[in-house]
Image (cartoon, rainbow, N blue to C red; front, top):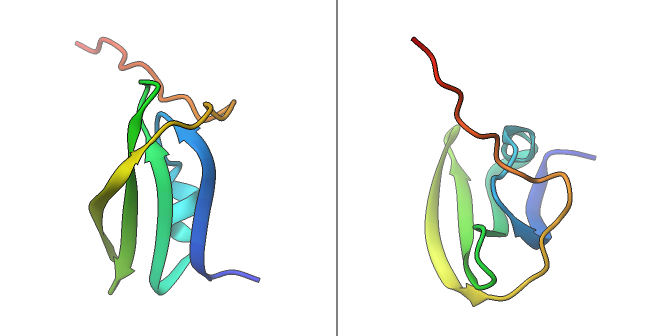
Length: 77
């Protein structure tokens, strides 16, 4: 079924998995609310010629999705 023209994430996430971006068609868009706060910006990513660009849309208050937590940076020497 992939690639998809549009992917909409129906909940707040801390990070967008790379696997979602890889499922977008050329010219496809991904819409998601990203952040840890109760109110976060909704962003729209567009895939163009293998690279993606993003723009901020509007502020939203959505429940957090389980399993979409950003990994904490580990200390590396």
